[in-house]
Amino acid sequence: MKPLLSLRGITKEFPGVLANDQVDLDVYPGEVHALLGENGAGKSTLMNILYGLYGADAGQIFLAGREVTIASPREAIELGIGMVHQHFMLIPALTVSENIILGMGGKVHLNMREAAQKIRAAGEQYGLKVNPEARVATLSVGQQQRVEILKALYRGAKILILDEPTAVLTPQETEELFAILRQLTTSGVTVIFISHKLNEVMAISQRVSVLRRGRKIKTVFTSETSPEELASLMVGREVNLQLDKHPASPGEPVLEIKDLYVPGEQNLPAVQGISLTVRAGEIFGLAGVDGNGQSELIRAITGLQRVLKGHIRICGQEATNLPPRQLLDLGMAHIPEDRQKQGLILDMKIEENLILEYFSQAPFSRHHFLQAGSIQNLAQKLIQDFDIRTPSCEIPAGNLSGGNQQKIILARSLYRQPRLLIAVHPTRGLDIGAADFIHRTLIAERERGCAILLVSTELDEILRVSDRIGIIYEGRLMGVMDATGADITTIGLLMAGREQENEVAM
Image 1 (cartoon, helix red, strand yellow):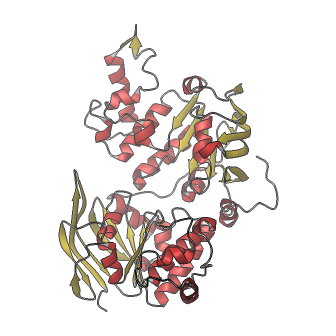
Image 2 (tube, one colour; image 1 turned 60 degrees about the vertical axis):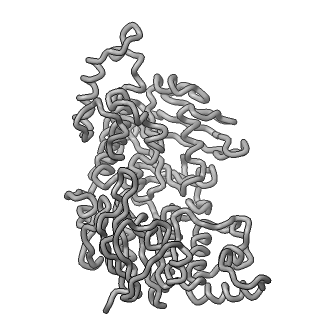
Image 3 (cartoon, rainbow, N blue to C red; image 1 turned 30 degrees about the vertical axis):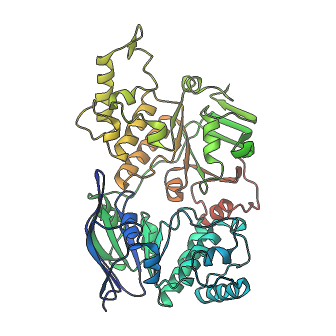
């Protein structure tokens, strides 16, 4: 069988970054071909070139054996290539039909009833049932994704590119998506599935191409590989995917939240009546689709946002609306959700970033003057203890990789052995090896007796590390369960806002 799509020598360079380096790729008719790699590996750039959003600096694209030039998304669509982006390109105020036909051109006077009938028929054909008259703003995230896929197919796409399509889906919505993709390939559609999640790639694809630092490393048949091999290909070294941890022995409550309300946009409550407790020696994982109040909750706990109502206690002391400095003095540490904007000052030296929370205290300051020797001694110790890969503690933090930047924040947060650690998306954008190091460090802190609140949209991470799991939806805590034997189906239903039948103690 000849490939339907061939990329040869695709190269793309941005200022200071070689995003794609001589990439070759063959995709065959009717397959789900996974493009696997860590964030920054070049997956999305490569597909944006195929879709006409970027122009390649070098290389060729062949479609059904014929070389083509794709200078815009319109040209890609005309060639039968459609793309569903990680962040949907829909207008919430318009209906499904209006979104699908938007920009298609054609008749001056639109027959919306006829268009709705055609869209409904296409939905039946491809297993993408959705009400054409419904406004997109009223649809769930999973339904909006169906609209995006249907929009591409309605415009004649025979090659469908999905960029991290499960990032905003519940487990049930992910399974529904996979069922749709299997039906699409049966009907002759070819799918390119961009992901960094090993389990999803193993579940849905027939072949996998692995990218690392802009280069294609290898293409393998999914049936002939394993998660361990794919992980090694992604990071260039052997990775142990097993995390050994002993059962937790939780102690006294360290973080207590009672009936908490926190404002969001337009001063409306983003957190609505949450109550939870995190105890010494346990990891409490907060799961949920991004944008359901997690950021506002964490900002309130860490003193970065005012609380409307309710109470926060840390180590038995009232901590509601205290400033961050006093919270640090109570024994709290914080790994923020955006390491570059909130966790580091990128132009400052590594050693300076490592003492940001302690620079005014002994032994780093004396009579208001920084003590260079003490600062360097600490930096060198933490660089060694946390395996921060750097030639010197005096280079800017912005010169390091994302994984090493995160290790700076981790080292700074754990230096004084906090009693409470707030860890928000601690492995976002990191390779598997760096993520594994952070997971093992969190487990070690829990063994020491630290109470850890872990916030992540990666359900695999929550299940791997947590002792108890809480699920947040639209600012409400839907339920709490032990991680041991946690039921994925139940978690998925709670993430979608469906109430538990039996209330669980929090």
